Length: 132
Length: 132
DNA sequence: GATAAGGTTTCCACTTACTGGAAGGTCAAG
DNA sequence: CTTGACCTTCCAGTAAGTGGAAACCTTATC
Image (cartoon, rainbow over all chains, first blue to last red; front, side, top):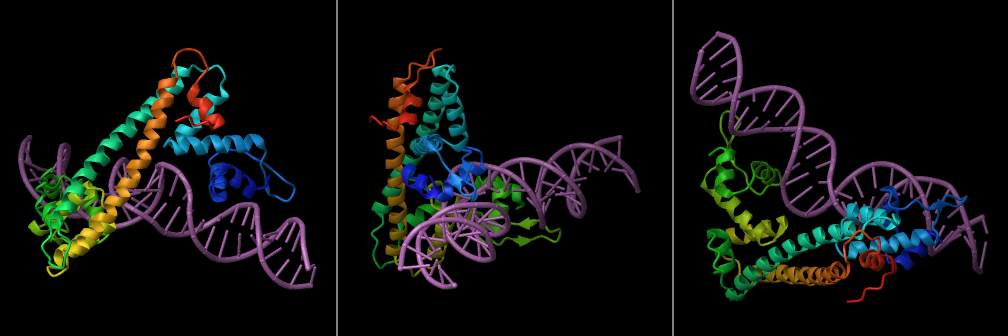
């Protein structure tokens, strides 16, 4: 398969696939013309990475997950630990975002949004009175 | 005020304040020794930026918000529009994160996390069966 | 006056995970 | 034989800082 075929099959942009090769996530063979010749295992790895990235795992996490996947003898506890750490980071980020959203929604609601210049959003940013 | 004083007062790292000057968000005067001599208006601007960043506004948004703030005649509708757009982006991000979190939590829960190699997390990443 | 500690300056590099674009080689069709 | 669609590499840029080096300034102490 040429790169655009794998791109279609994996759902990843060709550019991204080249990048993943650059950073050593895949090592596809090359055809005599220099084109990447991806096989099913390359596609499988890319799909794996795509799904892990879709769950928010970092590239380094993906590297580790793939190493875990390749090591048929590793303990599932190791994988679970990695996933739990990631989950905890997501929860932190979620809490932050919810807080932002609530404050922002409150401010947006308070702003009448008409032709007049008076604006509670700017007032709040300016004087730092964050009324929840 | 020297930079460390403003850092303390604004809650921003000195490095960040220098960076904000680099990109033109503030233009503090200089003392004869070359040190930045920040006045209250610099501090006010930094605090404003810090709060806007805390609400997740991008630097470019901050630039615009400060322009709005400086323009006493702009319509509050303009500010509200900017904030609403930002709120909408946050909502999208929140929905994505929640989806990630739910899928991930499900997988973590399904993984027994012991010494054995069998692991639903890796299985899912590998075969792409995302059972919600 | 010397020295040491601590604050400040600039500048350069690095981070994450790509993405865009340029210059050029390859392939299949007509 | 040319056209268009692929493909290649390499360089640069993104967001928003952060880390560190080398050098200058200030203040206190000896």
